Image 1 (cartoon, rainbow, N blue to C red):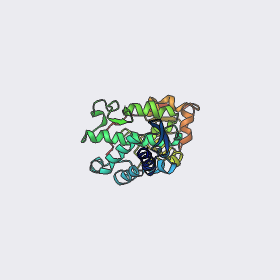
Image 2 (cartoon, rainbow, N blue to C red):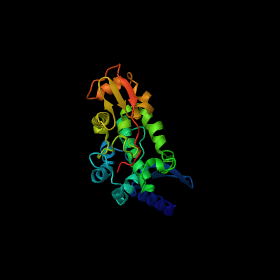
Image 3 (cartoon, helix red, strand yellow):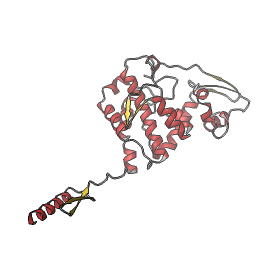
Length: 261
């Protein structure tokens, strides 16, 4: 009996030293021993969720110009890029994340994965030269193999923020430019407004006057997304440098799918 008691005390002491906290029962010869479980990992802090995109920010600063031209060759040779992709796939948002934290995460993820898709097929002249570019399930996030279509249509668009269309990119000249900074929850409102104004008032993407507008096809493809709080003209007038008449004639520009390099 003395031997058994000594063994039990040793087990308890060893478990405590390992930092275990939550007890479970173990029964031996009618003697109950409480062997604690490992502690749960701490919840992700706001600072952590902000800083997780620092690596992506650094990559963008080094390899993307202020005009959105991407140096794909340089990113391909930057080992930090693969580290960031792996990090994203292992750090999924959960219900404790705010809407802006989720938006920032998935915008950054979409853009990084778009670049990764290009790099997997590089050199390439256009994303449309790649077979089913938006439907390829190339990245495992948790238990799900993600593709770009799912992130855009099933995650981002479901969050009812139409300005995401000017933050995510399709690696093409007619797309909104890839911002050379990472999106973060704390700056998201400013960043989305800036991206929307830049795209809308870029004469190479949209031609706007009071009585006539020739718009990017983004406004045709996703028309419903811009009509949550009024019609398309209402949305445009929030961000346009020119006040557009409600009677303005509307047409759409051809879309240039050449690579944004």
